[in-house]
Length: 388
Image (cartoon, rainbow, N blue to C red; front, side):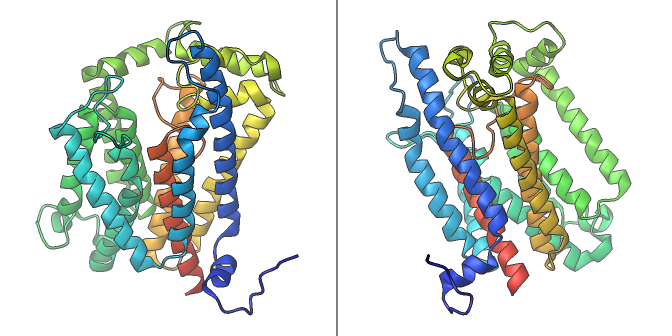
């Protein structure tokens, strides 16, 4: 059997032995689940649309995702072999390009499903800038926090010195663009993604030593955003009110919960028919499809794998020697963990329904490629911090 020897001096050999193979293996497993669900969801969509004029084939979802799978996997491996300097360069490019496209969603709005979150170029796949700029957001936020600590030390959260006085290194240079991003997301409306960004930033700041009074202020700001969303966004208000009422069995959440119950412990097999009536079973409610097809035990196993990814990231952050790398790993864990929790809680009716994908597993090219880039970056940083 072919086996790499550590004594061999090659870039591939060094990468193989130095990378976090446990984290990489978990990510690849989630990708395999995604491919399986693309086929399963496509089969359900085929049954759902078979009587329509433009029905799809059972393999259409899988074929549609193949280019994204190839781009994502190649991105994951290629980026994981880079150094910290290259990762930062890629982060700036990612953030810059998709920040411009995010502004483009305002200048050239294109409505899809009552939202303007997509940037559309005729003849090309639609892209979601808020999704694709997540890797750049996490990495540049980590870099900025590390730079502020390098300059100001423990006084980095003293706003009188680091924000109200506009200096070369000041919180204002970070917060003003962030407020613009959040405002655009609120306008789309894309309330869930806005909260995801705020939550990720909050975790990164707390882990960086944010004082208790500012932590409470941050929590208060999050509550304020929820109140704004309920007040000014009708769909947020309606979904919040629906959470406290009876479940409509013909609604998305009604079908989602019935599909979970129908799956039982081991899956319904050929009797998995409820998910065929569930819109967005391939993306927002992919857990319902997994539960009905493969059962609660398999679904809990998938959730445990995702929990282990989260734990592995935080474990690596504790031992990182570089402040920027530690912040970046924490940010990746926060972004991944919060998005997983939002998706699962929405499916299980523990919070108002929110259209957000399950990382790596749900159908959706922008989200898949973004997380491949993000995890490729964090794998590269872990490898460099451990072995350099």
